[in-house]
Image (cartoon, rainbow, N blue to C red; front, side, top):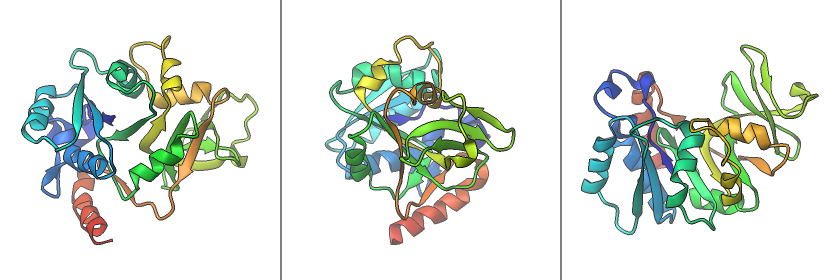
Length: 242
């Protein structure tokens, strides 16, 4: 599933006229970069959720089909459901016996998605993480099992473990790429219409097997702000040469 429904407020004024998914980097929309990477990694069915300027995305996909790829739309036009609610709404469009790879539309990387997906099948959920510098970190124990989250700027800590020692945990930044099992998706049934997927993971990480995966030699870029667009052009050129 490609999360493409966001408002893209950090990319204004571009997103005053188009969805973030259609912002162009290296001559192609962000959505095209992600879909082509998924296709090249062997994924044949992809769900794309839409909310902000939804018809623009639908029209683009109709006009730019990818051979061998079944692309389905999860329409959130009436209400933006955030990452957790959006995933749950799209459930009927998935193969109910398979884990689901989730990829934010504004993430560019060199990760081998097929290899990451295969490794993730052993867990209820697997989050691609990195040592990128940020204020907000996911917290993992020595077995790389998710145990909490912290905001270094505010000191806030969220965890189902009441006596968690934050300084003893491994701190990693979330990449926006993860894999979730169908069994875990069914556990979202009683959640409200709108909720974040990280909130869901944090609420159940003491009960299920949610792991962090650190990819060796990972190169990843979040194209979420106007000032990152020029850097993203250089990033894509470097990836093509590596």
